[in-house]
Length: 171
Image (cartoon, rainbow, N blue to C red; front, side):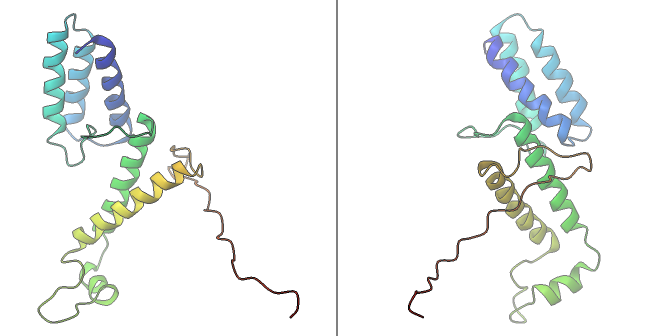
């Protein structure tokens, strides 16, 4: 991997690590990335990158994405991931989860557990919903992808939908 490409990818992951908790692997990934930045050959950078990919692959939410690159900046991706994880943890740690699931998302029959079989499944679904909303807010220029001093988004509300009902002049 050439040095410019490695530097770009390394900086994206370092930015992600600033905003997201990688647990005990965080310092290891950071040290590996930093070591790769000092590598002098493409072959050495490939080895460091393979190590980083392997380490990131063990994380619950990896900063390395497959497929088409996002049109979001590295900072925005890191912040969206961070907020999404916070939301998922918040929903998963709700007290009286069984009661909430029983009242808010009740079973339809005795054989089915309802739409979600656990609070963790519900939390993961809520996190995905939040992720879609955050990305839409960035696309609609209602949020710049950063957090304010209170660690909140401060995003603007969506524009109200236009009322399409017409009132005729003859009434």
